[in-house]
Image 1 (spheres, one colour):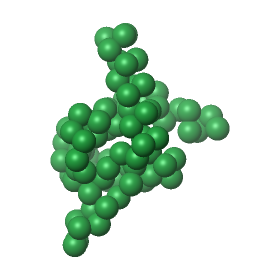
Image 2 (cartoon, rainbow, N blue to C red):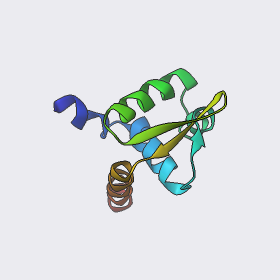
Image 3 (cartoon, rainbow, N blue to C red):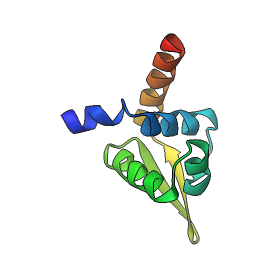
Length: 88
């Protein structure tokens, strides 16, 4: 439980969820990594954890994987965005 809780209070995972929320369509991992200023490999590790938690899904389009928020991921992202708005 603690491990799942901790991921939301780290900057990069929170920013990834917010970035996915901003544009509702599926996104490329490499673009998402650039948006939150981290390496592609670090982004993939974070996204794999978010997938295990049921917050994102990977959609395969040929050789490319797109990332999309789940309903649960959208709810979490909304809450993180609200916290960010309140505390600045």
